[in-house]
Amino acid sequence: MSERAFLIASKVEAFVRDVVIPYEKDPRVAVHGHGPPEDLVQEMREKARAASVLTPHILADGRHLTQRETAAVLTKSGLSPLGPLACNTQAPDEGTDRARSRARAAGDDAAGRSYARAGIGSGAVRRRRQGRR
Image 1 (spheres, rainbow, N blue to C red):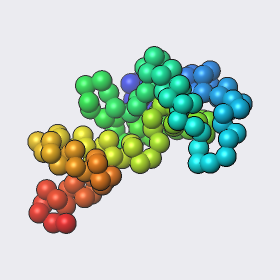
Image 2: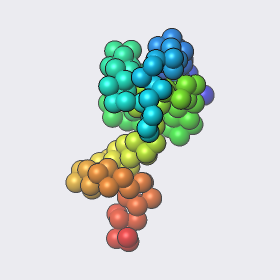
Image 3: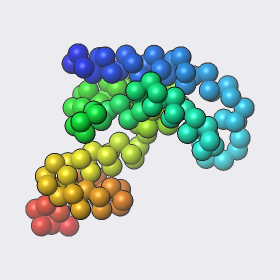
């Protein structure tokens, strides 16, 4: 693992252990339905933003970690079922962000936005650039 991935993963792990895991006992998590309520997710994300671990697999300059680095970081966010929601590393957002970034890096800002809206992955971006559907 690279030094930058190790540092980011360590920061994410500390955040999940110290801030997110206590939320598992929050009574709002126990409500019925699909996942925790939006107010709880936003509360955790505000704390993640303050701790600089919101979307940690995308660097401040818009570049992405490598696949191996991303795996190391996302593993740490998954130490709690709420960790990926708090850090914004849950699927499908991670793949969507990567597809958008690759399309924009190829000089196709409009495609990056449309692929992101449609939730289409990087394989579709590559085929589209090659003129195939």
